[in-house]
Image 1 (cartoon, one colour):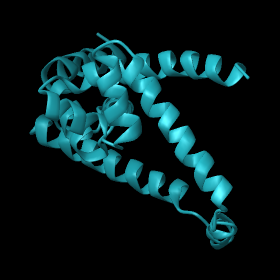
Image 2: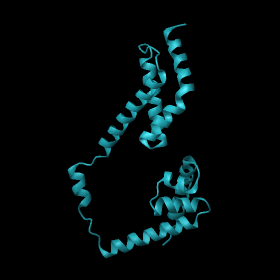
Image 3: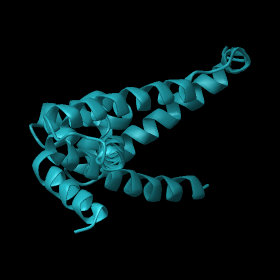
Length: 174
């Protein structure tokens, strides 16, 4: 066997044994399912790259350390991207005083969104209302309803498409 095939086999074994553990660590740290999948892949890619230098001792601890470091790097990078500059903060605060007309339109739009959510068939209407009108996260909705997070995420995605379709028709009507 070549070194590459030995490394590939070791990677496959590590994936079988530890993928769920590494994903759960990443998910808890980054808080987003899809980001956690990406960080998990990066963890195993890094593991593969350093496998020839790894002595094979305490593989589980080694993988969890890589995962933790990858998550911390991801979170730092995400924070840097989200950090607004001074100019952006000042621009966002300019014109924050809204006129009575703007407040009325905001309320009207909120009312239309709430009604559109209520008009959706179950369970999409309730999930959409809680997500878009009550500002609950998908995790909070899943916990309140006692269902899996992935189920709620799927329902939110479908509800969003239904709402877009429904609200486009309302906007198009004079």
